[in-house]
Length: 296
Length: 284
Image (cartoon, rainbow over all chains, first blue to last red; front, top):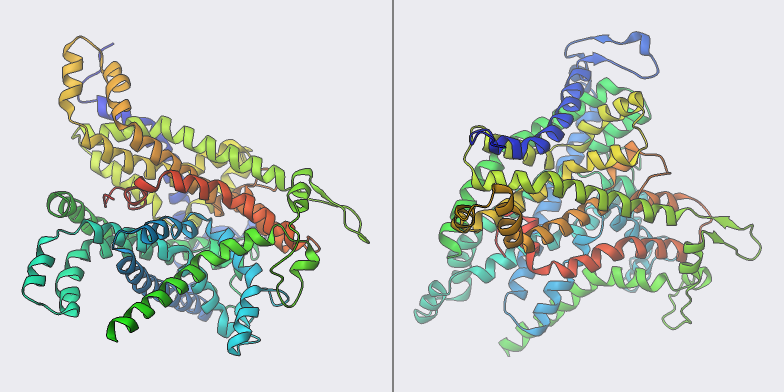
C-alpha cells in the first residue's frame, strides 16, 4: 500500500483532527445559542434575537460584579504566586539534600485535584474543629470567618489557589534558575558587584522568559478557575465570589437560561482568545530562544 | 552578626514554606486515622490510637455508628470510575496523539502548525463553553452518563498535553536513524514502531502519566456530563462533604485515597515534570 507522500502527515493527524471537529461543533453551537432566546423552561419562546443576550448581560450589574470578582481573583493569585514562587525558587536554587527533597515535596499540592484541594482546606478551616483556626487562636485571630463572610471569602479562595498553583511557578522558575549560565555571575563576582544589583541586572532579565511562560499559563487558568471556587463557595455568600464559569454554570442549571450562559462564556472565550494569542506568539519566540541560546 | 540574621530569616522561611504547603496534606492523612470524637475536640489531639476503621468503612461502603442507623456510602464506585475514566482517556490519547505528534515533529505540511495550535487552544478554552452544548447533545442522542462520552470529552485536556510534549521528544530524535532503517528495506510503519517509538519512550511514558494525573484531577466534565453512577472521585468527594452526618474521618479518608494515586505518580515523573507542565516550552 502506497500512500501519497503529501497526504501522509494528514493521515497521521486525521484521528486527532476528527476529535477536534467533534469539539468544534459544540463550540459553534454555543455561539449560536448565545444569539438566541433560549430558556429550557420556556422552549416555545425560543428564537433568534441577535445580540440581546449580550446587551442584557452587559447592562446587568451582577455581570459587572462577576467581571470585577474574576479580575480581582486573577490579579491577586498571579501576583502572589509569582512573588512567592520566585522567592521559593531562589531559596531552593542551590543544590543540597534539603533543597532537593523540598523541590520534590513542594510539587505535591500541584498534583492534587483543585477541587479536592478545596475540600482539604474546608476540613482545615472548619469552624468546629479546623486545625488552622486553632493555630490562629494563638495570635488572637479566634473567629476568622473564611468562606462564610463576603469580606473574607475571596481571601480564602485566593489562599487555596496559591496553595495549589505556587508550586507550578516555583518548579518552572527553579528549572530556569538552575539552567542559567555561570559566566555572568562569575564575572560579577570578580568585579565585586553587590547582591541586589546582580539580582536585578543579571538573574531577573535572564529568568524573564521563564517568568513569562509561567505567568501566562497561570493567567489563562486563573481567569477560568471553576473547580476551586465551586467546591469551596459556589460563588457565595451572595455573589461575593461569583466568577465567570461559576456564574455561567448557575445560569444554566438554576435559571436554565442557556442563551445568557452561552453569551457569558463567549465573552470569557474572547478574553482567553486574546490572551492566548499574545501567549502563543510570545511562547513560540521563547521556545526558539530557550532552545537556541539559554540551554546550550 | 549580619550573617546570623540572614540565616535566621532563611530558617524561618523554610519553616513557613513547609508549614503552609506540606502541613495540610500531612494533617489530612492524620485525620483519616482518627475517630469522629477525636477530630471534633476543640483542642486537637496529637497522641491517639490510630484506627483503620475509616478505610474499612470506605471500602465496605457502610458505616455503623452507635445510636445512628447504618449509613451507606458510594465512594468505592467513584474510585473505580476515576480509574476507568483516566486509564480510558490516556489509552485513547496515546492512540490518537502519538502518530499526530510524530507527524507534527517530522513533516512540514500545509496547515500543520494551525492544526497543532488549534488543538493546543482547547487546553485554554473555557470548559463550560464546550460542555454546555455537549450536555444538551448528549442528552438527545443518549450519550449522557456514559463512560464513552466522558472519555471523549477528556481528550480536550489530555490530547493537547500529550501531543505537545511528545512532539518535542520526536523532534529531538535525528531522522537519519529512521532513514537508515528504511533504506534497509523496512516500511515506514516498521521504522516508526521499532525505532521512533522506542527512542521517544521515556517522553511518551512521562507524558501519559501526566495525562493520567490531569484526567484523574478533572472535575468539571463529570460534574456536568455524568450522573453519580459514573462520576469520579473529585465530584464524589464533594457530594461526600456536603452530605450531612458522614463522619469527618471518613471524609478525610476519602480525600486521602483520592489524592494518593496522583501524588505517587508525581514522584515517578519528577524528571519530566517541568517539560510536561510547560507543554515543552521549558526543558527541565
